[in-house]
Image (cartoon, protein in one colour):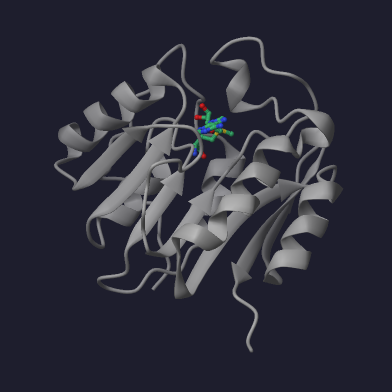
Amino acid sequence: MRVELDPNIVVGEGPLVYRPAEDSLLLLASIPLGPGERFLEVGTGTGLVALHAARHGRAVATDANREAVRLARANARRNGLPLDVVLTHIMAGLRGPFDVVAFNPPYLEGPPEDNLDRAWAGGHQGSDVSLRFLADLDRVLAPQGRAYLLLSRANETARQDAEARFRMRIVATKRLFFEELGVLELTRRGP
Ligand SMILES: C[S@@+](CC[C@H](N)C(=O)[O-])C[C@H]1O[C@@H](n2cnc3c(N)ncnc32)[C@H](O)[C@@H]1O
């Protein structure tokens, strides 16, 4: 079953938190989620994606931005959805295992200077945060688990790293006026 945009879910926004955009919606629509599957979203921002997953069962989300954590928790309460939001770097401190992990990372080139910058500034080639996520993913992913990572065409280093570590499939793409986005589905390689 795909996670679909639900007009009944009301997602409040805040000045210091990434405002959901086309990348958020592309990721959301790319995630198949079965009943009872354990879900984690890294870098949840307002919580939009994780709240939709939480309609299907208890979900966990993280963000390194304190304001995003506060807002996502408030959005979960507002919608009466079972979402645990953790303030942490990527998924440090979480044990898993999770059946489905999703991340819309900061994917543009540049160093972050404040919390809001962290929403888009992904360091060298926009790949640094995604590389750290990929290095830790194996630890929290269930044996048959799937991860959905959104990247832009510029994130070649992260894409190559994803392909080296996991079986990789591109499940969605979207061309915007200044970039092309893709959602990678990552699963463990067979024996
Ligand atoms: C592009 S925004 C996506 C927000 C939301 N998931 C969405 O799709 O609308 C990236 C998010 O990742 C968070 N983030 C950036 N670096 C992070 C890190 N090292 N650990 C956890 N979250 C991080 C940002 O604060 C921001 O909320």
